[in-house]
Length: 231
Length: 231
DNA sequence: CGAATACTTGATAGTCCTCAACTCAAGTGG
DNA sequence: CCACTTGAGTTGAGGACTATCAAGTATTCG
Image (cartoon, rainbow over all chains, first blue to last red; front, side, top):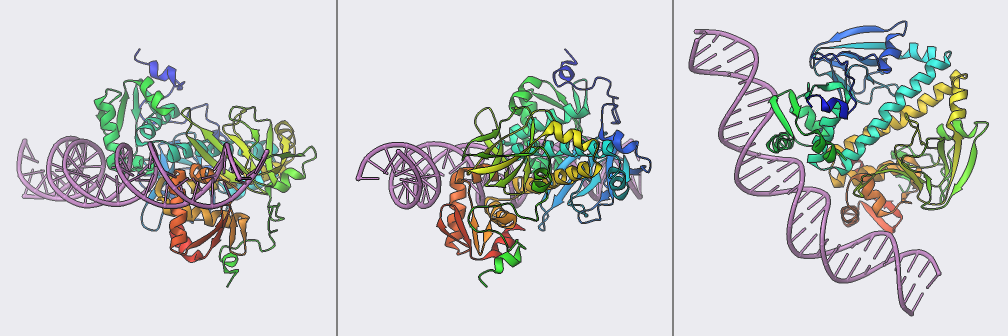
């Protein structure tokens, strides 16, 4: 009963507890890691991997840790585009400059591959070019799913979707979900304010859907109810 | 002064007025059209090209007309993911089934290519595989830009962004923007209700930012103000 | 022309935001 | 060790924006 959550959302049971690490099932990380000229660099918490408008010199993948990609409006409003965890690729651009900024949420190891090198290899290696296409299509579909959340779901549903999604993507250990990001990050991801995020979490705790033992940890107490809210 | 709008948003001045047609600058349409086994099929207004859950057998591109791609929640709420116009590709999936439905907004000619055939060619032709990657990355970036709209912009800004975007993508003739979709479609695209869409358009007409000569036509009277709202 | 559909406008309500005060945890220095 | 500081998060009161419900107008199509 204790681990029913893992079964329900088909989480990899071999996930290392504690610090997030790359899972062997991930494709994006592998494709880039196996690249001859890939380098792996450590980014400290809250440091920038690249900024909006920077030349899109590198393709990136998270090996350990977590990053947030976001866009800023002139008046300071921020929309987080995605959180990336070990195995996820980011920094894919159609244009020659990055359309959003990305920085580390916690100390993270990031795999970097020069885009020019990727382009050169892709032009000669159809298998590789095809893999590139597949790993680009995945975040596209994720972004599209996410549009439904921002366009049509209320605060409660957004919060539930978020928790289930983070759990499914590997943050679940037993019934505990690790949330490395701040409440403000969650708010800017879900298109809400920090107060609304806090209130929704408190309400879920009140109804015994979750438990909040610490700031960066959520225990899923009633996953079924969360999944219902999630649609 | 009459055509200042076109210059301002760098629209192709050779655009054919009236029925939308494929522009020579589009890449996606060309990549698929030049494909040996591509077929072109006519879809009547409001008929389905493919449905959510259907096998993702085909990659598609709009040759003439327009389509909407959308997702439905169980309770009937709808979120339109994107409108596609001549030259735009759609139906790109990471999974073997379509994650959303797509149907024609007006009578449309759609280019269809079997995905199995695309996969086979991509596996041997690096140039083609690379092109596939490029045309997939573009809608990804568009979706990400769109997340900012849904997550952080108010109704007025959403409406302005929408008009500018449609104009930029080829709907502009002189200062007139053609809106082939219904008000309900616009609402479901912008994450608003049909009433709010109607009210925002009326307010823009009141402030002489736009003119509304007919249901499916908007004259941009003060593009500068629209661009300001658009951020 | 009549019917159906699409759209607009108005009144009211509800959700979420804003502003403000407060709590809590972690870190610092005396 | 503890008062102090600082930043993050929570909670409360009130207000703004958009949704909802309802009625009316315009357009389209048979």
